[in-house]
Length: 213
Ligand code: AP5
Image 1 (cartoon, rainbow, N blue to C red):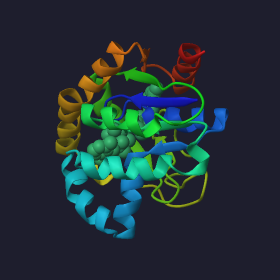
Image 2 (cartoon, rainbow, N blue to C red):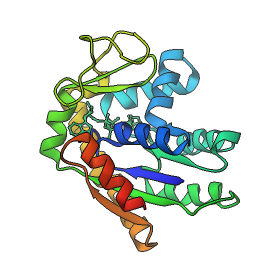
Image 3 (spheres, helix red, strand yellow):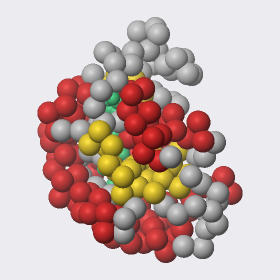
Image 4 (spheres, rainbow, N blue to C red):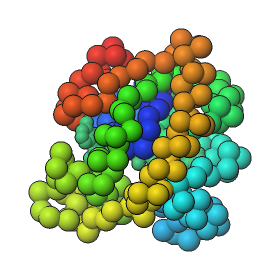
């Protein structure tokens, strides 16, 4: 499986990609998680990315392309992967083609999760994330067993710093302006599948599996 998830912030890309990766035995590669790790570790990349992410903007293409090139060159990604959060611009999509061109296995599939902006704002307000292992919860739809404690690794859960109202608005704007053209790009190559991202998490998962079958 070589799959790209496209969708607005909070559409469920991370939630679905984690489950799908576990079921299909391929790595889940989230550029957002990679950047948050770099910020937490205080690396040069993290220092550059932190203010951009906090304001809801996009990290420059050259940095992102370098990160993905490195990550996809690792052994575990040679036969398959699920990309969550990349590509986010047409330039990233064009460069990705060159990066995966020599890879063995299946062709790239692209799945767009459709969720309207009003639903996004509600979802993000009640999201909680694990800063240690990246697990994602929702206080209503997917709560942790114990309040504010990660089921998977026991760390305390947080609300992401970019989940405030003004950053979410800016992230939605970036999605409409810079990432929707990526969906159009893949549509023109007949690689795009659109899936309704609303409804219970398990139902969305089954829709995705059906659309990929
Ligand atoms: P990133 O981490 O990729 O953020 P995002 O795209 O804004 O997406 P999110 O992680 O917010 O949401 P999601 O779609 O994964 O939804 P989730 O499953 O959590 O990127 C962060 C930042 O990094 C960017 O803003 C940018 O600055 C930078 N960046 C990253 N990649 C980049 C790139 N390639 N180029 C440039 N910059 C880049 O679900 C959301 C909530 O809803 C959760 O609480 C979940 O439990 C709940 N939920 C999920 N599904 C459902 C459902 N069906 N019903 C109800 N609730 C649900």
